[in-house]
Length: 116
Image (tube, rainbow, N blue to C red; front, side, top):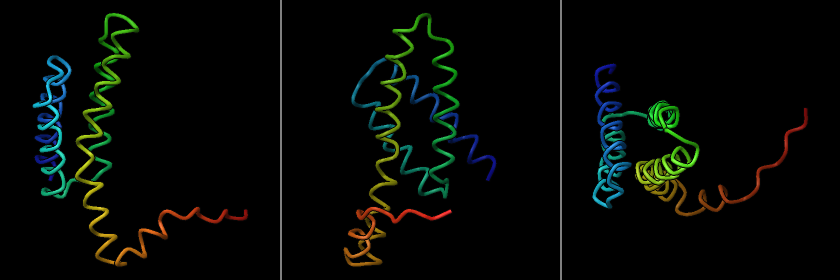
């Protein structure tokens, strides 16, 4: 399992860097493919988010100035959203399967507040 985590993290970093350098739509396609890989290999959403957080932290720290750091952060956000889109599709499919749409309506309702 550790090897899959390491390999995913390396591929994520490389694809994110390529996207930040080029800004090309094809690189966003790689982000989507990475999300599919994560789901297929049983890597969870939290692993993807931790990987993203670590890589973005390094990129922001290495930015030569504040404006470039913000541009990197915004571009990295787009990359992350594309990576996570498969998790959203998987979730929606699960909700539709389990509740026939009823569970999705329940998820959209506000949750009651807990009393402490």
